[in-house]
Every structure is written in C-alpha cells, then in structure tokens.
Length: 335
Image (cartoon, rainbow, N blue to C red; front, side, top):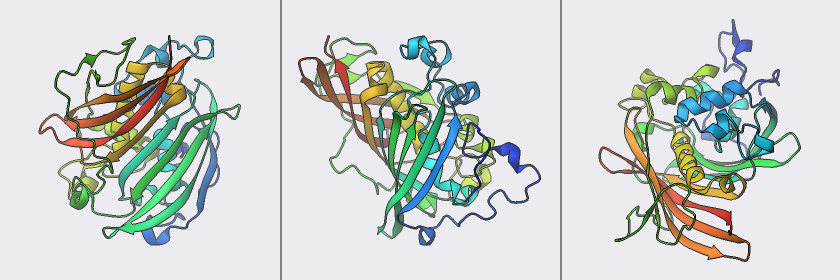
C-alpha cells in the first residue's frame, strides 16, 4: 500500500513521484484473483481546496455560484459540487492496486448525499471491498466507502460495482447491467416539462433536460491525468488497446452530470437528502453530445416534507442510445 502522504487534494500527491521509475511499484496487480474480501482502504485525508473545486467545475462544465461565489450553507461559504468526492471514493482501491494497470468497467453506482463539503475543509475517506463474484464470465467486486467532514458528519456514501480486468471494447454497451426494474426513458404523452426551481413538482413531470459534451481534456482531468494515472479514459493509445475507437468518458463523470441536473431542480435539499442508483449501459466517447433527464414517479406529501421519487437516465445524442439509467430520490420542505 502507498505510504500516507502529506495533506494533498488527491489520493496521490504527484509532487512525490519525481524521479520515480514506476509510480505503481509495490502495488498489487488489479485483477480479480488479487482481491481480498473484506479488504480495507484508508483512512486517507484530502483537502478540498480552491484548485479541487475549480478543476471539478471545469471537468463537468458546471460553474454554479454556490461553488465559486457563495452558497446557502455555512453562512454563505462556498461548497464543493455534490459529486466532488465521488471519484476519490471510487478510486480508493488504487491505494493498494496499481492505478495505471486498471482495465476495469464500472457497472453500477449508488450514492447517498448527506451534507455538502465546505471550501478549505479536510475530509477523511475510507472504504472496503465487501463482496466479489463472477457473473457472465467476468469478475465483479463491490466497494462501499464514505467521506466524512472535519466534524465527523457524513458527506457522501458510495456503493459501486466494478468488473476487474477486462477488454472494455468487448463488453461496453452489451447491456450486462440492465436495471432490474426496467427504466425505459420513455416520456408519457402529455407530460409536463418542468424547469429548475419549479415550486410544485408532481408525479408524471419530466425534468427539463441538461445537455452536455465532455471534451477529451475534461475527461482526462476527471480520470486522474494530473496524478500521472493512465487509463482508457485519458490516453488514446490505451483506449485503442482496449478495442475502443477513442477514449471514453468515465461513467461516474456522466453520473456527476445527473447530480448537477438534480441539484438544479431540487436545490440544497439534494445535498442533504439526495440518493441515486444507476446502472451503466453503454459507452460515451469524448466529444459526443448527450443529455440527462428524469421522470418524477411519485410525490409523497407529509406534514412538513415531500418525498420525491424519480427515474433518471442519460442518452447519446447521435443515436438516442441510453448510457445509464436508474432511480433517484430527494426530500423537500413542504412549503
């Protein structure tokens, strides 16, 4: 395992790699046969500094004033994006496994959003491999992880499923991770499309889509090029070796766009009560336009709060192919 590093914004402090012949030396081969269950990762501390927030804003093309100016939390202090720490949690296993030798495929992601992280805050990340199994000839591993704030409050919880060591071009888009309860992405006839901030969301409403195009440099930065990690998301040659035409956008980066959509529609409540569970269905090449939206499936009214359930999905613009699909929920104050 890597030795604990001086406090830095990422899992790897690249300043300590100068003169290193092999940054992955001493780490385990990232193959299914190397996995131990249970296997712990961390705890490790990161600082959410100015650079980390601005870098994430660039990768997602999300320049909300809550992250760059002021927010409704902490007496107006700036906060990180809802999914700011998501990739750090997903990548915790590279504290023990060679990050640049990973040729995995993320099939499923579930996150609980408990509270925002404040600019300048030192956070603690810790995770564990909790299960491993073989399905359709591919070795899968389950990671559960959590990020905690300086005061011990939970910020975000993660449960992800990943195929360890595969040929991404052979399995990408074959539908191996179809949702158990099928999310069709079909819009009911006559459905109302609501814009962000709609005060009275109702069952059957469709969220105004959020459209994005992630460029190669954005994907590369998101997928840890700044930590000298190489993979088929940030390196053209590695993508071709994996039988891909070009680098593909990390599934979690698209997941982050979906969180932006939900924050846009449900505001600060998503930072404290949001949940989303998606399956990854097809790849997205860099520079390919796509859109994200959701369908409200139920609104449960209580005395003080409303609980909203949704189906969510993302589609490629070129052929309308569904990239990921799943479910989300949020609890709003009942004004």
